[in-house]
Image (cartoon, rainbow, N blue to C red; front, side):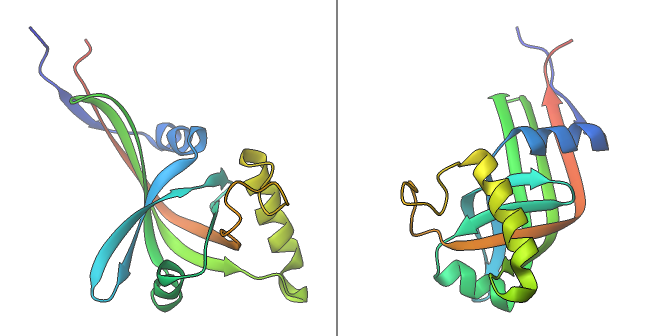
Length: 147
């Protein structure tokens, strides 16, 4: 017989730790009057989340409405899980003279997870656009059947 699940909010340190220890989440954004959700690799660094994408519909949508939510989960069972949602604003990282330092920071963060990113050995060479998300709110929930 299993225990009844207990649900709780994650404290800020727990939410931060969950977001920091993972590198794949789901990015939610609005496009064409509806909400879309797509998986994305990311790296958390300070109050920023860095990721990259390919030119296309998602990038166009983010340019029009830059408010996003990034969800990351740890799931052990139907009632044993932890989940965080980071709400923020996404910015395209340019490589012009005024953004060189930001571009270098974003690239270093991404290469900490994917060392071959934007090199000749890049496993996803079409993902040439660097993004950074400024997190303005981070919340988390958990469920457990453990005593």
